[in-house]
Length: 126
Image 1: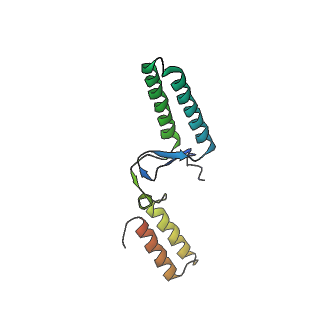
Image 2: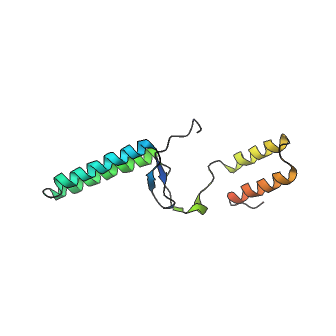
Image 3: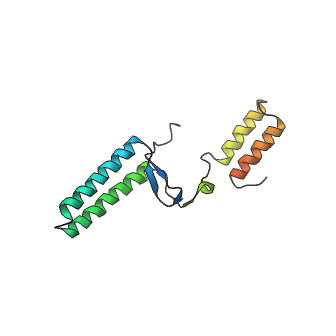
């Protein structure tokens, strides 16, 4: 993992907006605590104080949302695998490819094939 990357506890959903199941033990702990608090408030407050229970649900859900925003992937609409964008920029990938060619670790045909693959992954045709 790059030292500049923040550790993620929640991965993004493949389809739609939001997060999927936790991907780290810290995320599972947060989720278990949240589920325990939701269940406890439902058991203790829902039968007698419905409005207080609804307020506690809103506060606990907002808290989980904030944790997911801070410790999860950046939220955006996703439409499956085809929507997954490469994590490194096009310029970074092409620079790395040029460096491999400069060091003569790739033949010209391998270079062109890999360049086309990188360009198509970014939706560019060259």
